[in-house]
Amino acid sequence: MMDLQAHSVEVVDEDQPRYRIGTVAAIVQLHPQTIRYYESIGLISPQRVRGRMRLYSERDVARLRQIVELTQLGVNLAGVEIILRLREQIVALQAEIERLRALIGAELAPPSKPE
Image (tube, rainbow, N blue to C red; front, side):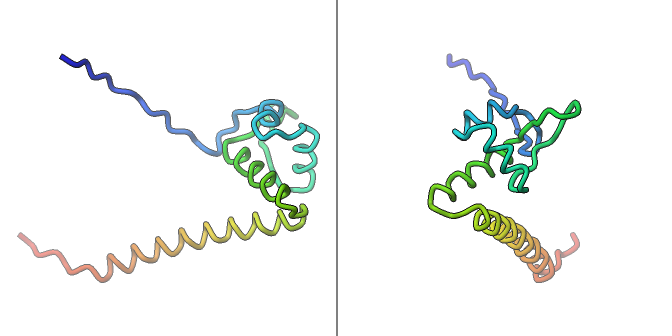
């Protein structure tokens, strides 16, 4: 008889601050000072805990990966900022489109018949 065990899947909150700057620097292969510079010019906004310690979320790490990718393609930091802002707007607009589609679908659905 085969013993099946249930495996729990951890749901990760992408905005939960969890990584210190040294860990993030290793993950994205950037110098911590570069990450601090990106913060100073507004490309990244880690959360601060206990006064001054920066903690980065999964979303911050993903954003840093996008910055690295774009700069490796030759995009300057001003261009990176514009591209990231446009990507965020696209995601927001796609979510709005899906919301409106669901609303229209609900309006066009035939009324349910009482039993």
